[in-house]
Amino acid sequence: MNISLVGLTLHVPDVDHSLNFYKQLPDRSILFHMPGKFALLKVGSWRLGLLQDQKRSFHVEIDCQDLDATCVLLKESGFQLILSGLWMWKGHVLRRLISKRSA
Image 1 (cartoon, rainbow, N blue to C red):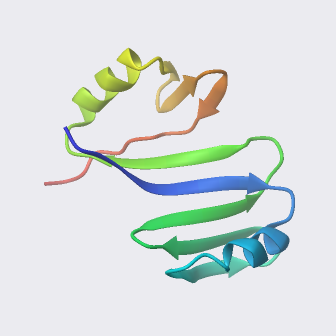
Image 2: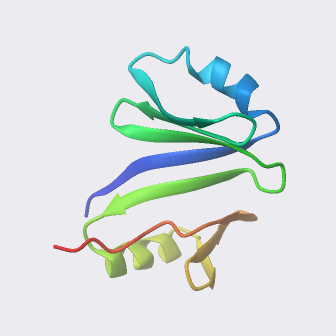
Protein backbone atom coordinates (compact mmCIF):
# COMPACT_ATOMS: atom_id res chain seq x y z
CA MET A 1 0.00 0.00 0.00
CA ASN A 2 1.25 3.47 -0.85
CA ILE A 3 0.47 6.42 1.46
CA SER A 4 1.92 9.85 0.72
CA LEU A 5 2.01 13.13 2.61
CA VAL A 6 0.54 15.78 0.33
CA GLY A 7 -0.05 18.62 2.74
CA LEU A 8 0.47 19.91 6.23
CA THR A 9 -1.23 22.95 7.73
CA LEU A 10 0.38 24.47 10.79
CA HIS A 11 -1.84 26.57 13.05
CA VAL A 12 0.27 29.56 14.02
CA PRO A 13 -0.21 32.72 16.12
CA ASP A 14 1.13 35.03 13.35
CA VAL A 15 0.77 33.99 9.70
CA ASP A 16 2.91 36.76 8.25
CA HIS A 17 5.79 36.14 10.67
CA SER A 18 5.62 32.39 9.96
CA LEU A 19 5.45 33.01 6.21
CA ASN A 20 8.65 35.08 6.36
CA PHE A 21 10.36 32.11 8.02
CA TYR A 22 9.04 29.39 5.68
CA LYS A 23 9.76 31.49 2.55
CA GLN A 24 13.40 30.61 3.19
CA LEU A 25 12.83 26.92 2.35
CA PRO A 26 14.40 25.79 -0.92
CA ASP A 27 12.18 24.73 -3.84
CA ARG A 28 9.13 26.60 -2.59
CA SER A 29 6.61 29.02 -4.05
CA ILE A 30 3.76 30.97 -2.50
CA LEU A 31 0.44 29.73 -3.92
CA PHE A 32 -1.87 31.94 -1.87
CA HIS A 33 -1.56 34.57 0.85
CA MET A 34 -4.35 36.24 2.77
CA PRO A 35 -2.41 38.54 5.15
CA GLY A 36 -3.13 37.93 8.80
CA LYS A 37 -5.24 34.83 8.09
CA PHE A 38 -3.75 32.16 5.82
CA ALA A 39 -0.85 31.34 3.50
CA LEU A 40 -0.27 28.31 1.28
CA LEU A 41 3.15 27.37 -0.04
CA LYS A 42 4.20 24.65 -2.44
CA VAL A 43 7.32 22.96 -1.11
CA GLY A 44 8.68 20.39 -3.53
CA SER A 45 5.72 18.12 -4.32
CA TRP A 46 3.66 18.91 -1.21
CA ARG A 47 1.81 21.89 0.27
CA LEU A 48 2.45 23.76 3.51
CA GLY A 49 -0.43 25.79 4.91
CA LEU A 50 -0.09 28.43 7.62
CA LEU A 51 -3.37 29.21 9.38
CA GLN A 52 -3.72 31.86 12.05
CA ASP A 53 -5.37 29.76 14.75
CA GLN A 54 -4.21 28.94 18.25
CA LYS A 55 -7.03 26.50 19.09
CA ARG A 56 -5.54 23.59 17.16
CA SER A 57 -1.96 22.68 16.31
CA PHE A 58 -1.93 21.13 12.83
CA HIS A 59 -3.85 19.47 10.00
CA VAL A 60 -2.42 16.62 7.91
CA GLU A 61 -3.37 15.64 4.35
CA ILE A 62 -2.39 12.28 2.92
CA ASP A 63 -3.06 10.51 -0.36
CA CYS A 64 -3.73 6.79 -0.64
CA GLN A 65 -4.82 4.26 -3.23
CA ASP A 66 -7.16 2.23 -0.98
CA LEU A 67 -9.19 4.25 1.51
CA ASP A 68 -10.58 1.28 3.44
CA ALA A 69 -7.18 -0.40 3.82
CA THR A 70 -5.64 2.90 4.92
CA CYS A 71 -8.34 3.31 7.61
CA VAL A 72 -7.54 -0.18 8.89
CA LEU A 73 -3.81 0.64 8.91
CA LEU A 74 -4.44 3.88 10.82
CA LYS A 75 -6.51 2.02 13.43
CA GLU A 76 -3.80 -0.63 13.79
CA SER A 77 -1.22 2.16 14.25
CA GLY A 78 -3.09 3.61 17.23
CA PHE A 79 -5.32 6.21 15.56
CA GLN A 80 -8.91 6.36 16.82
CA LEU A 81 -11.85 7.37 14.66
CA ILE A 82 -13.80 9.71 16.96
CA LEU A 83 -16.36 11.08 14.47
CA SER A 84 -16.88 10.55 10.78
CA GLY A 85 -13.75 12.00 9.19
CA LEU A 86 -12.07 12.94 12.48
CA TRP A 87 -9.18 10.90 13.86
CA MET A 88 -7.35 11.10 17.16
CA TRP A 89 -3.74 10.06 17.71
CA LYS A 90 -1.83 10.40 20.97
CA GLY A 91 -4.26 13.03 22.24
CA HIS A 92 -4.18 15.15 19.06
CA VAL A 93 -7.37 15.50 17.04
CA LEU A 94 -6.62 15.28 13.34
CA ARG A 95 -9.13 16.47 10.78
CA ARG A 96 -10.20 14.38 7.82
CA LEU A 97 -7.01 12.68 6.70
CA ILE A 98 -8.23 10.80 3.68
CA SER A 99 -10.50 11.44 0.76
CA LYS A 100 -11.51 9.01 -1.94
CA ARG A 101 -10.16 9.59 -5.41
CA SER A 102 -12.25 8.99 -8.48
CA ALA A 103 -10.48 6.47 -10.67
